[in-house]
Length: 100
Image (cartoon, rainbow, N blue to C red; front, top):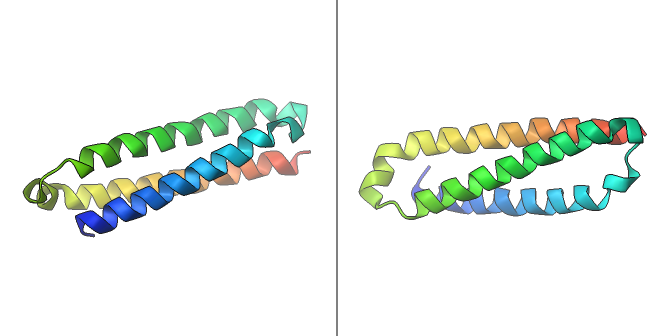
């Protein structure tokens, strides 16, 4: 993955996360009361992922191309781990809706 691809994919993921989190926050009152605590916990996890991803993107955007070549593999691994964590959190939040 090159630097521009990484930045583009990261921005797209950030946009998806922001939209998803906004939708979840709007629907929070619709969650069954016994599921709300878990729902908010997963929502906070997603917010943490979003914030961490935004920080990493800022850091990677300021890297020179030479430094990027050194860390590009770890950047790809980071992106993959964030995407996987987001999918897991998404699944858990989706389960909260099923408990209604």
